[in-house]
Image (tube, rainbow, N blue to C red; front, side, top):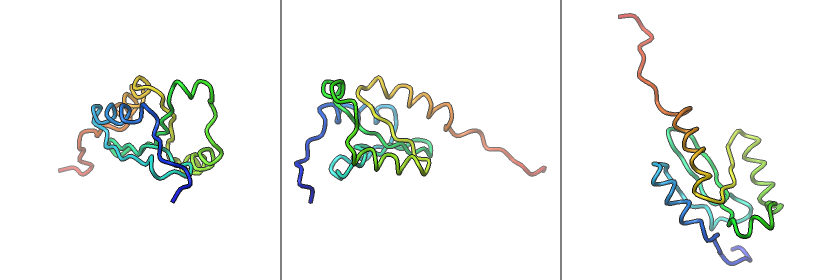
Length: 113
């Protein structure tokens, strides 16, 4: 059990709902603590971990905690994308990239008939 009370950022639910509206699968990891990102998002075979920051507080404290830096670095070392998001607008580029790069393509037959 963490020694800290669970206090998600004010915009956490808004970010989760915006991801769902963009057809992302979403699981909240906010209660995990220990530096783990707040959200696990998946779409078209792509997995993205998202750290949600309150824009009111994040503007003053732009640095992630030491635990967050360590965990995020570990994921990045293995090729997992970890993003810091403060507003719903931040998700637009993420979704655009997912659609462009990861949308399924037409089935192809590699064997002549």
